Amino acid sequence: MSVTLYALDGCPYCETVHDALDDYGVEYETHWVEPLHSDRDEVKRASGQRGVPVLIDDDSGVTMAESENIVAYVETSLA
Picture 1 (cartoon, helix red, strand yellow):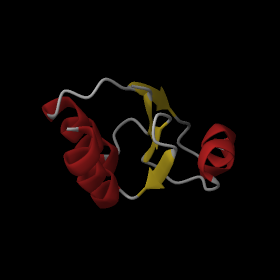
Picture 2 (spheres, rainbow, N blue to C red):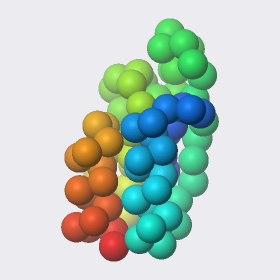
Picture 3 (cartoon, rainbow, N blue to C red):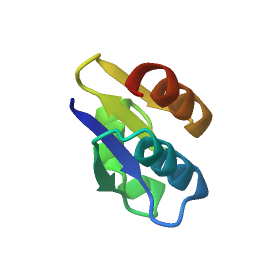
Picture 4 (cartoon, rainbow, N blue to C red):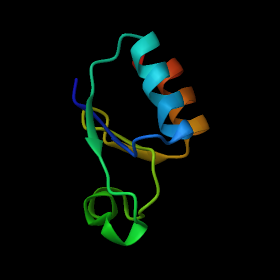
């Protein structure tokens, strides 16, 4: 499984997603992003926007943002 999470240190929404991934035992790699939106080119290239968290599941071709949507996806598709 190839799951990547783009996250910002100290972001409560990112922490929620981290917790869900950990709780369900999902293996993932975290890419820590810069605090300034204008410096988040890597996130923009990956997802088309600069906000975080962003989860990418290469195995299913899913790229998504919004912590609530990501947690729901983790619970239904990755658990």
